[in-house]
Amino acid sequence: MAPGSLLCPNYQFTLSAPSRDPNLLPVPAHESASRGHGKCPKWTLRLITVPIDVQRIIMSLLTGKDLSSLMQTCSYFLDIGLPELCLHIPKKPIRSPQHAISFYSFLRVGGWPCSRWPLIRALWLTFPMHWGLYSGSPTPCSYEAHMDALLGILRHCSHISRLHIDNWPSDYMGNMSQFLHAIPKSVEDLTIPLSPHMDGKHLSKLLRRPLRRLAFPVDQPDVYQIQNPHTSLVLQTLSPTLVEVDRLLLPRLDTPRGLKGGHRSAHVIASVRKLGVRMDEWNRGLVETLTAVFPNTTHFKLWPSPGLLLASHLSSTLDLRIGDETTPMREHNCAQWRMHLPAWGASLVSIWAAQLRDLYCLGVSRHVSCLSVPLCMQSEWSYILPTVLADMQPGFLELRLDGLRLGRHVQDSRVPPGLDDPGAPSVNRLAVHFVCAACHSSDTEVILNFIEQGWGAEMPLTHLLFRYRHTLREPIDFQVLVRDLPFPPDVARSISTTVSGRLARVAQAFPKLRWFGLDILGWGLKCWEVSVCPTAPKASVTLIETSEQSGRRVVHATQMDMFNNH
Image (cartoon, rainbow, N blue to C red; front, side, top):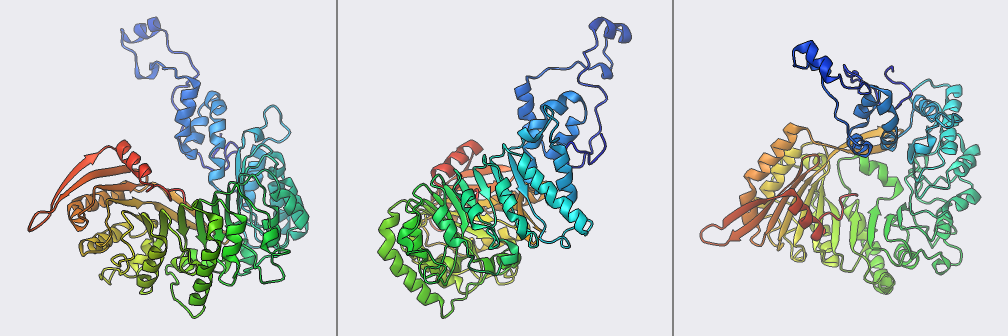
C-alpha cells in the first residue's frame, strides 16, 4: 500500500513490512530440525498467539503513524486495527481540501458492509474561512469540492458522539442551515462557533437536542464583535440535559438584545455543573445572569472577551493594568455577588481564570477550594493577586507559568511580590504549572531561586507540586491549536536533575512542607515525603522518595489534579 493511501489519510506510512507474514503457520518441528540439525534458523521463529482483545489494547497504545504502518503488514492487522485507527481521527483537524476529500473516500460511503463510517465516533472539522485563504489550489471549484466533502462527512457519520467545529466559512452563509441540519442527532459533546449569520430556527433545534456538553469557540470573522444577536437565543434554548457549557458569551441585560422580559424569564439550567463564560466588562448583569440561569455550578472557568482572545493566545504579555473602568466594575460586581450569592449556594468548588485582571473585575467574594490563575512579573500582579486570594481564600492554588512571559523578565531576579502578602495564609497546597514549551529549564531555575529567597514563605504549605506540560501551539486558519506532547528525554532529565538537586533547600523555605511532587508529561510523577526538623542554625530536611502510585493518590486526595484537563 502506497504512502498517503486512503487507509488513514492523516498519517504517512514509513515502517516496512516484516520479513515473515504473521498469518503463516509455524514451520513444523521435523522440517526445522532436518534443515538445521536440530537448530531453527532465524527466519523460522515460531509465533505466539495473543487474544484479540489483548492485541487491541496493545494497538490502542500505538501512535496513529505506527498503527497505520502495522496495519499495512497483513490483512489480519488491517481488519482488527481499523477500530483503533478510527480513534486517532479526532486528534487532528480535517482542514485541507485534500484531507477532507481523502477522508470522505476513506469512509466508503455506499459500500456496505465494508463502509467505515459506523466506526467513526468523533470528528474535528475546520471549515475554510474563504476559498482564497486556505492552502491548496485556490480555485472556486476546489473550494466547492472541499465544502461538499465536509458536508458529506457530516451527513454520513451518523454515529458520532463528539463533534468539534472550529469556524464557519465567511462566504458560505447562504447554505449554513444545511450544515446545522446535517449534524447527527447522536452527538452529545458539541463544540460549535456561534455565528451571527446562523438561522435562528435551525440553531434553536440544534441546541434543544439532548446534549451533555456544549462549547462555543470564537468564530474568527467576528473575533472583535463583542455581542452576537444569538446570545439571548442560546440562553433561552439550552438543553436541560447539559452538564457542561463552555466559552459562553452572556447577553447584556441593558441592551435591546438582552433577554426578553429580563433575566427572570430566562431558561434555568439546573443540570450544568461545569460552566465557562467569556468576560464582558460592559455587561452589568453578568453576575445576576450567572446565578439565575446556572444555580448549581461547581466548576467555573472565566475566559477573555472575544476581542482579546486571539491576542491573549499570540501575545507573550498579560494586560493587568487597572484602568478607571476597572474599579467601578469590580465594586458593582461585588455588590451583585452579595445580593445573589445565595442563588449559587455552597456548590462552587473551583475557579479557573485565563486572565487575572478579568477575575479581579468579576469580584467573586466567596470561599473557593481550588483556584488557578496565570503567573506574571508585572507590578500590578502584586496588588491584584493578594486581593483575589483574600476574596476567595482558596486552599489549593495553581499558578500557570508561561515560559515566554517569564523569559522577558528573567533578567529581573527580584522575588515576585504578592504571595508573601497576608492575603495568602489560606493556601496550603501550591502547584506551579509550566505550560509552555520554551525555557523550561531556565524557568525552573528562576522559580527555585525565588523560593530560596523567601517567595511565598507566608503560605503554610504542606504540599508543593511542579507540573510540566510540553505544549505545542500552531495556527490553523487563524485558530490556535494547542497540543500536549511528551518531553524530549534530555529536557526531562535536565528538569528532574535541577529540581532534585535543590529539593532540600526548597523544603527549608517551607517549614510545614510534608510532600513534594515533580510531574513531567510523558515521564511520570516523582514524589517525596518531606520531614523538616527546625534545628539551629539550619533546618534539617529528610526526603523519602515514594512510588508514583502513592503520589497519584496524594495528588487526587488533595485536589491538586483539579485543573489537569483545563
